[in-house]
Image (cartoon, rainbow, N blue to C red):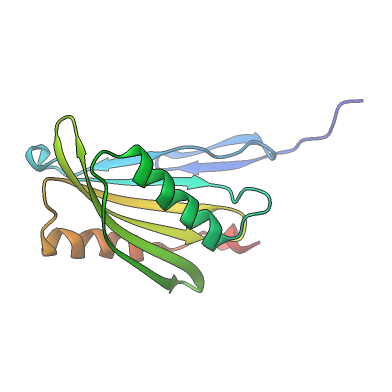
Length: 149
């Protein structure tokens, strides 16, 4: 007998489509600054907490993965906090890409069923103003009404 799998809305910037409820959202949204010369971008992605890992363990696993995968990885800072009542970890780090140095600020946000990952990226060193603007975009996150259900 076929399993009943009702369709639910999947929202994105232009609208939404109806998808089976059990399909996982693994989309990545990339937004670029209008000034293409400095290579600034803001990325939104998501992941699910693997079975048996809590948010702190997941975060540590991500940090370890970044440090092993990114050439010349250097942690600048790591800070725990909260946003809209949800636990966060904010990382700042730099690394070397084939195109040159990269500086990133990343916030991991522990939602009830998934982890949202906001990443602000600049080619070269991130200025204090760029960092402040990236963090402002991250902390402007507002969940949909149904996100806590």
